[in-house]
Image 1 (cartoon, rainbow, N blue to C red):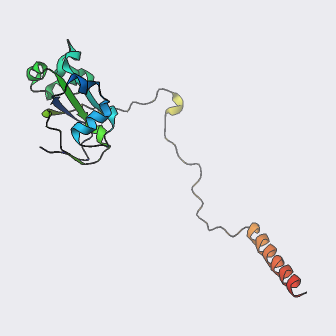
Image 2 (image 1 turned 30 degrees about the vertical axis):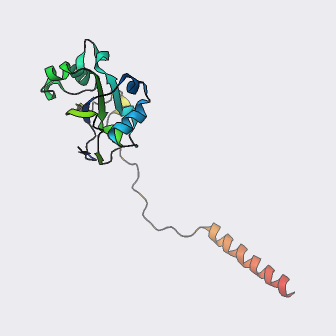
Image 3 (image 1 turned 120 degrees about the vertical axis):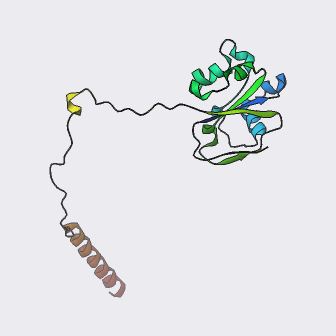
Length: 173
């Protein structure tokens, strides 16, 4: 099975059940995730591997909504998610560094579902300070007249001519 994740998928969350042993869970999680998903360039900060027994009282559906920001309405199968047992691997699309990836997950992984984080809308409120009120306007229009070469260029030219004359006088004198 292959799984293609497009580059524009920044808020996706993929949940896999994982047939892992207790020894597997003691391994380096970053290396284990890269091995299981077949991508060595994953950002381990956005991949989680743990046993669902660690979520006692919360359940997987609660973890997705409360811990990862998935809207409750987006989880159509909370009872099924909460009935799962054993290790899981949770892959956030942010782990892919914004690139399109085709993963070939290890046969020990089974995709349970794909969800998306709920991003709150951006809301701009006016700043409370009086100094932040109003509009900024430039005091003067930009000066669009062409500039003449300054006296520095004239002095530089004279210095170069004098240097050349001195070099010629020394060479032939």
